[in-house]
Length: 150
Image (cartoon, rainbow, N blue to C red):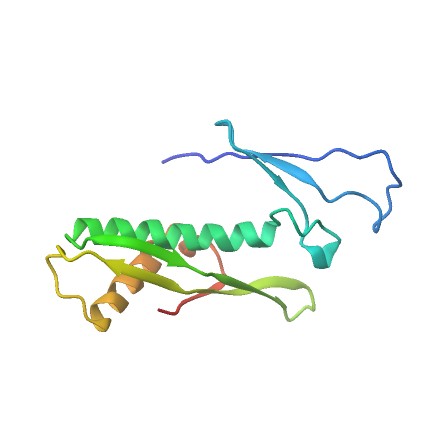
């Protein structure tokens, strides 16, 4: 149906190439002029001022859920004024002892417009989030447990 590309570039900075010494800084190029400097997470010797892959993963899941939620609302005549999510990913040890992002919690806060055509009680909002979760491309693509807490 479609392709989605990103180019990662890393270059040795000339220092020692040992586990503790090599730079974790790299760049993501999305091919449309958008460049993002990234690094490993600070706990893996990365730069805390740069985005790390775990943060990007969590942000991607949050973004996919939000965009799917907004699409569903728009198709049902439900006006949304704002959407904020303070998503959190949890790196845990798997059965083999290796770390993985085992779960992500989404914490969406949605403000609806007054012109919505449907009454929005908590049950309806939960239904919209459940549908968004089931239809989100990324949530359907990963084994990480994703919980929506609203």
